[in-house]
Structure formats: C-alpha cells, structure tokens
Amino acid sequence: MAKVTTTEHGTITDDNHAALWHGRFKEGPDAAAVDFETSIYVDERMAFDDIEGSKAHATMLGKQGIIPQSDADAIVAGLDDIKKDLESGALTIDYSAEDIHSFIEATLTDRIGEAGKKVHTGRSRNDQVALDERLYLRHAVSDIQKKIKTLISCLTDIAEQHTKTYMPGFTHMQHAQPVTLAQHVCAWAWMLVRDCDRFSDAVKRLNVSPLGAGALAGSSLPLDREYVAQQLHFDGVTQNSLDSVSDRDYCIELASALAITQSHLSRFCEEVVLWATVEFGFIDLSEKWSTGSSIMPQKKNPDFAELIRGRTGRVYGDLMALLTMMKGIPLAYDRDMQEDKQSLFDAYDIVFANITVFTSMIQTATWNTKRMETGCEGGYLNATDIAEYLVRKGMPFRTAHGVSAKAVRKAIEQDIPLEKLTIAEFKECSPLIDDDIYASITTQACVEARSVTGGPAPEKVVEQITALRQFCK
Image 1 (cartoon, rainbow, N blue to C red):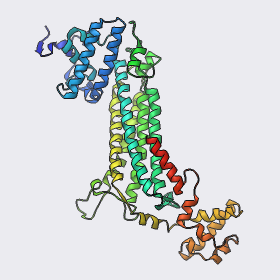
Image 2: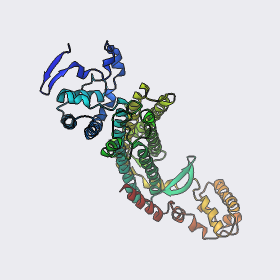
Image 3: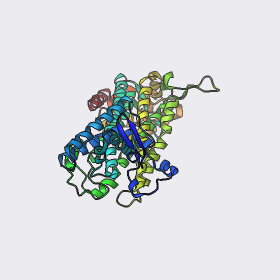
Image 4: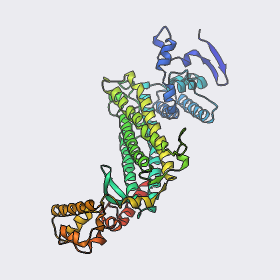
C-alpha cells in the first residue's frame, strides 16, 4: 500500500510524487540514476512559464469538453495558488523532483486531488518542455534587449559630450585617420543595435506554440491548439508534430545571437584594456571597476574588462555544445535534448551579466581628451587628406596617392609631421599644392571634412546620436 501523508492541502500519496512514467516499471530507478537524469536545478527557472502553459492547456481542455469544466477551473485556481506561494516563498521547490514539470504537477495534485491528474491530458513532456522554453525565452530576450538598449543610451551620452574630442582611428592597430571619441563609441553602439535586431528576428521563429504535438504524433483528443496559442500570445502554432518536439533551432539561434553580442563586448573590452595602458592613456576606469595587485602597490588593473573578454570562450562553448548536441539526433525527441537548457541558460546569464557590468564600467570612466588629441599628432593621419586635396584640384586619385606618399617620405626623413613641411617641399611633390594645404590638413579640418553619412564630422555624428536615441525609444 502506498504511504499516505496528511498536510494542510489534503492527502498525499507517494504515487503523486513518483516519476511521471513510473507505471510501466516494477522497480524504481537507482538513486544514482535519478541523480544523473534530474534536471530541476536547471529548469526550475521555467516554473512560472510551466504554470502559465498548464493554465492555458487546462482552460482549453475544459472548453473542448475533454475534462469537466469544474476540473479545469480547479486546475487553473490551483496553479494560481502555486504561483502565488512560489512568489511569496510559502512554497519552495522540492529538488528531489525529476524536473520542474513533475514538481508543479505533483504539487497541484497534492492540493486539489484527482482533478490535478487531468492537467497532463493530451500533452507530453516533449511538447510541454518545448512550450515552456519558448515562453521563458520570449521574455528573457525582452529583458536582455532592455539591457542592451540601456548600454546604447549610455554610449550615446558619452558620444554627445565628445563630438569634438579628436582621437586617432586605427587599422591594423596602426594610426590611420583622425576621428572623434563620439564616432568611436557610436560604432560600438551600432554593433549593439544589430544585436538587438538579431534577437528580434529570432523571436519571429521562436514565437509559435508547439503544445498539442504530444510526444511526436499529436493526440486523438479534440485539442484546440490555436486557442492555446492565442491565450499565450503566440503568433501561431507549429505545423508538424514531429518537428515540434525535436526542434531546437530556436535555442541554437539565440545562442548564436548571444555569442555575437558577446564577441562585440569582448572587442569593446579589448579596446578598454589597451586604452587604459600607460602607453595609450585614453581612459581612466573608476576605482569601483578596477582592482590592484597583491605585490605591486601602484597597479590599477582593468580586471572587469578582462573578465568580460575572458568569458567569451564559455559563451562560444555553449553555442558549440548546442550545435554538437543536435548534429546527429534522429526524429523525433531524444533525451540528449535535455542538455539544451544548461548551455543556453549559461550563455544567457553570462552575456546578461557582462552587459550590466560593462555599462556600469564605461559609465563611470573618465576620458583623457588631451592624450587622445595628442595621439593625432603622430603617424601621419592626415596623409589621405593631402591626396583628397589634390583630387579636388583635378588630379586622379591614384596619382594623388603617390604624391601624398612622397610627402610622407620627406616628413619621415626629417622626423617631422606633414604640416611642418615647407611649401617649397610640398611643391617638390606637386606644383598643384598651394599655401591652402595647411588649413586642409589640421586634425579639425580632416575630421570636419568627412561629412558623408556615417562619417566623423560633428554634425554627422549628431545624426547618429539622434538615430540611436530613437532606436532606444
């Protein structure tokens, strides 16, 4: 006889808390086997999503006459009570349960009795898990997009203050052309805009309901899948029951979007680490977001930027784990797919935390604008502007390029900047060069002349800032 326990919620038998599949077996699983297969430590974060999905399913079962309306109402009320108690802490998750779905169903049955056993009518854990994941990921994506937009807003605030803060732009880590700090941080921001768009695009494929697909072949019961999808604010339902329970494209796609976002954060941090060096000296990180050395008293290390950069490997690894997990799985559901959540949730948590930390770190940093502007004095950043000066006078660009290169060689031989060449030396390179060359190759002139859309000219950067702020709204 099953053991009976009485609680304030009624009578509980061991059967209520057994594995959902236990009826087929004479023996219970080995304790080590139970521990090996349990996923509740990972999937507990989907508790409220499981409740919402089960409420919609039970409501449909009642509407369709598959179970009595009184039972459907009792299930919905019982699930609401479980949600309220989980939120308040009156109910805690039992980690001896196989997964969060088993825990919710067992708790429901403990509280409302036989009606609770009807909640799983017409569904399998296969379509139930896929539903819960989609519900959870839908709001998780919204949360991370809000974080990204907060960072974009922070970067536009910095840009707004530095539209005329000149700094060297780099290619191959060599001085290239002068830009502004505003232009540079706007470049970071546009990378994040694409990240937001990628998440929005992924949600288009995520936001369909798999519930009703059952284990793999649907159900002989008159389920109304479209009604459930409507109740849960999905755009529609999946179109093939086999595919519905074996699809994890949405996990891989989101992990890919997370990995790309993380790659951007890592690139930002690489620049922060470089800029914080004595050699660059462009940025001074707040002491709240720096650490020291256990042996060298003078050190102020950009550890948080380095940690964000270092955790990129974990996020990439999570994506590869998902791709590898799915590469050889035949239709339909296989237990390998239980491993999807750990990788995806890990990647999500890392990127979410990294965005939060990077925002605070960059928001509290100060900028050495004089050092940046001094950096524009070396490296012949205005060489291209000499070529374009000659183009405006009718010279073919390839010829002008050679003339500018000749001027650079003259300056290198004398170890002076281009603007220190005499007009006679310039004319040795080309007779088209006149005294107005000097006004054309100052740092300010070089930046302001680049007034194409997306360029570093202050008025064009202001256009970028306006567009970025509009995006964040």
